[in-house]
Amino acid sequence: MSETAPLPEPVLPASILERWIGRPPSQFTVEDLVETCRERRIRLVSLMHVAGDGQLKTLDFIPRSPSHLKDVLQGGERADGSSLFPGTGLPSGASDIVLRPRPERAFLDPFSPYPTLAVLCGHLTRKGEPLPQSPDTIVRRAHQRILRDYEVDLHALGEVEYFLGLSQAQGEATGKSERGYHATAPFVFGEELRRRALVLLGEMGIPVKYGHSEVGYIEPDESQPVTWEQHEVEMDLLPLPEAADAVALVHWVLKNLAARHGMRLSFEPIVRVGHAGSGLHFHFSPMLGGRHVGGRDGDGGFSPPAKWLIAGLVRLGGALMAFGNRREGSFIRLSQAKEAPSTVAWGEADRGALIRLPVTVRATDGRLITVPTIEFRLPDGSAHPHFLLAGAAQALAFGATIEDLDDLLARTESRRVRAQPGEARPIPKTFAEVGEELARRRGALEAGEVFPPALLDLVTRTRPA
Image 1: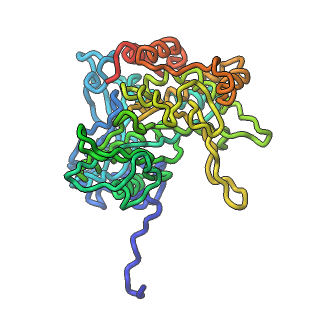
Image 2 (image 1 turned 90 degrees about the vertical axis):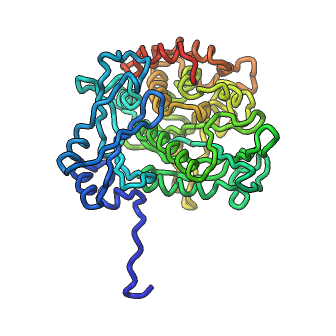
Image 3 (image 1 turned 90 degrees about the horizontal axis):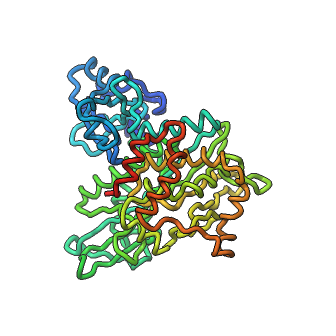
């Protein structure tokens, strides 16, 4: 490089806003965002939030002045809660709510044709209190409850699996049926889109662990002249509320990119019967005093929070299907048993168990590279991430109340369940059975005023869309 050549633009940290502001997102202030908009000539501000259906929503502003922008970022704006959270007890005659921006959750919108600052928001009532029906409120309350009552900080990451569809008119695909795992171009057509997604997520400040092509590859037939191939984006560990937001943002990024590439995209649990389905497995890491304690200790045992979480998921797993398995195809995916759980069990590295303890990676000097996690393999691409992760926190708290904890874990370990199949308890196979589990376990979900009764009533009596 010549002495006069300009230095390349720095790429670390990956987040554009973090590079511009010079501090981690947790330290972003409204003043930082106002100054960034002024210096970088940001034209639009978008207040984004997750509504009752789990989808991202948007309210856009054109800042007229620094003071106007500061008012929007500090106060937010009102919205119609009965439209955003239908059926949850907000009457249309008194349904005003407030979108309250969180400066630490700001990022640059990579898809807007104009320079746009996006800020994720929470929801407040007319009195300025957290809105009970809000997915953001529910996952934060669950997270705060285990921090307060058990001094456990629960982190999570999602494995987002999805299918990309390419019509025969768009080009020829060269993959092989059910042989797509870690395939690379030119044997997969979705690699460029997936890599673009990883870059954009990093620039938005969403930590990603890795991405790769997955097993699923479905050749076209007479009924559907579309080639489908499966990919995965795995996130990095984050506190529960941020982990839920991350999954919603991954879905949003992938949908935008697929639309721009002229491809079809599906998060459905099953694209075609008989082929691999798309799960949304979550890995959990309970923390005590800033230490990850999800794995076995030096004596081969588990920490109390790890036991609580495993046992709680064993007990509440069927009820959590109301938030994690919300399509007819969810039951088809599970019944096919292609690395999907069919019985209530947990096990070491057992991909057929409800709860799995994956292997950890160490450096050559023995240093731990990956954090030990507890993987919940039941959810799929239809999951509502905020409700599901709130349910996982409630499961941990419920697990702490189980008196025969060690006996329960011994009885439900996958090795024993396989050796004594008569004791195996099957997972629910219909919406009706999920509803029965939810009704039976709703007290554990309502505990600590985390899940509002009206919301659980709605979920219980309404068949998922």
